[in-house]
Image 1 (cartoon, rainbow, N blue to C red):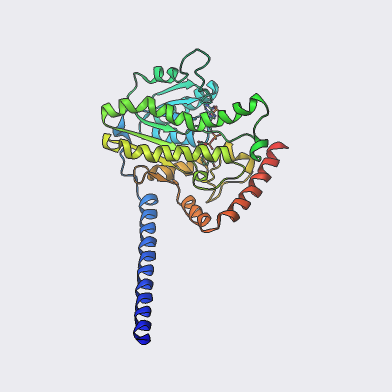
Image 2: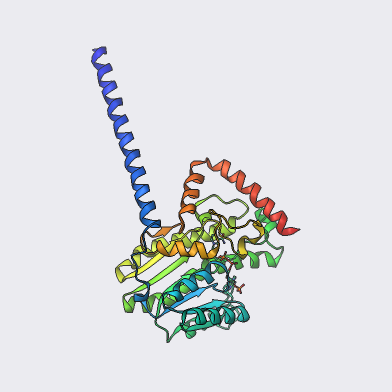
Amino acid sequence: MAFNDDITDSLFLHILGIITTMTLVVEALNKLYKFCAIHFFDSPVHLVKFGKWAIVTGSTDGIGKAIARELAKRGINIFLISRNLEKLSKVAAEVERAYNVETKILVFDFTNFDHSSGTGDPYNVISQAMKDLDVGIMVNNVGMAAGGANVFHKSQKSGDDQSKSVSNVIHCNASSRVKMMELVLPSMITRKRGLIINISSMSAALVSPILATYAATKRFDDTLSVSLAQEYRKHGIIIQSIQPGFVQTNMTEPLGSSANLFFPTATTYVHHMMKTIGKFDWTNGYWPHTISRWLIMLVPEHITSRAIIRKITELGEKLRT
Ligand SMILES: NC(=O)c1ccc[n+]([C@@H]2O[C@H](COP(=O)([O-])OP(=O)(O)OC[C@H]3O[C@@H](n4cnc5c(N)ncnc54)[C@H](OP(=O)(O)O)[C@@H]3O)[C@@H](O)[C@H]2O)c1
């Protein structure tokens, strides 16, 4: 009897071992397939088919400016929106000259969300400006870091300014996604085509002490994007979330590092990112960032959190001195 039980136990363990190994192999192959499919083949999406115009928010610097250039390179007219007229005019002139496309510019501050002033919805100005354009692509790129890279209660300004400062980050990084998609989706549905790219961040997937408000807005962007992707696919609309790791831009300037494989320039990053459009609902946009994410995920969360706190605190000290 005991002998039969031993055989049954060892057979059970044997089968369990085979199933576990097969599951791990299938998972690894699936991950490898997705990695190669996402990063090393061109995007299946023909960008010009969506319409004549693309709107890019936060398009005078960094990732937004690089995206505007990549789209213009394909012959798409660009509607640039940021806060600074001089920078907007300069980027628009550069893009027109380099790629022979039309541009339109609008000064708008995305921290602006307040209806209470009695002046109505601040986004009406964007809706008016785009009403005669055939907008096929919308890039929700604009974003700002939470003030001062510090522990939560110290990173925000005091008194009334505190809620203003937190709400600025939330409105710029998160509310702007909702409002801009509300504006473009109805006409995209009518035309049965459209592409919306939402720039989130790898911080959306990580516990991010010291950058809590920023990371929370980025998780909002990602969740909103991947959820709406399911709702609007049947209308011929692609909604793509992108979660970049660190990219060399004004935002990461305090890091003081020069560009390298894992810290690319915005131009390099966006060149790679464009290949990933329309394949899966979210990607990191750049293969070294996907690898970094895998490696970070292997490390227990309390260790990554401590490392993040150390790094960002150093950064915060640099910002404050
Ligand atoms: N850089 C990174 O490592 C990194 C990593 C992950 C995710 N991201 C995300 O990528 C996006 C772009 O970041 P970036 O690094 O390229 O930033 P950036 O270099 O600081 O550029 C930000 C752009 O947005 C505009 N902008 C900033 N605040 C604005 C506001 N309140 N209203 C209107 N326009 C505003 C800026 O122009 P004006 O100042 O002239 O208005 C500029 O054109 C953000 O959503 C960010 O969260 C960046």
